[in-house]
Image 1 (tube, rainbow, N blue to C red):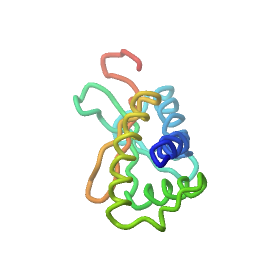
Image 2 (cartoon, rainbow, N blue to C red):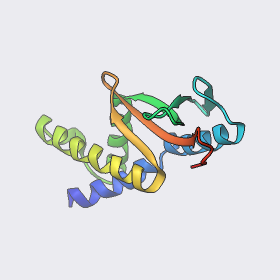
Image 3 (cartoon, rainbow, N blue to C red):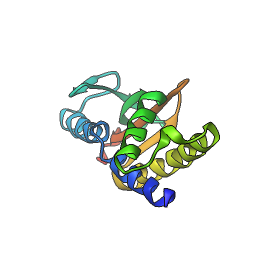
Amino acid sequence: MKKDLRIKVIQMASQDEIFRAMSYAALKARAARLGPGEIIKIGHFEMVVAEDETGEGCVVQIIETRQNMEDLVLAKAKELGLAPDAWDDHERREWMASFWIDLARVLSKWQNIEMRSGPGENLTFEKAVYTQRGLEI
């Protein structure tokens, strides 16, 4: 039951405004042909256009604290009737670890958003904008 609800929490979290803002920012950056270092504000989110890992393209990037994202996730879990406040520390860590793995897969597959840990106690999310070779993504 908890796993089924985790899947629903993943679906809800993946549709949160932060990821909608990233998609809009990527469209905006692509249309304006913004380059690395440009800042895009969508709502209360501030994203930066950065070079991708290969240096051949640009991504829209946002860095959020892991704690902010965890608070968002646990609020969604409560909406579905889970009681994360009642979980012991081990149970909570285990649930969150599985959640992050599954959320990363869902974001990558359905929204082309890559998620990774860092820097520090943060999570970084990136969405491709374009490649320098002119091949639009």
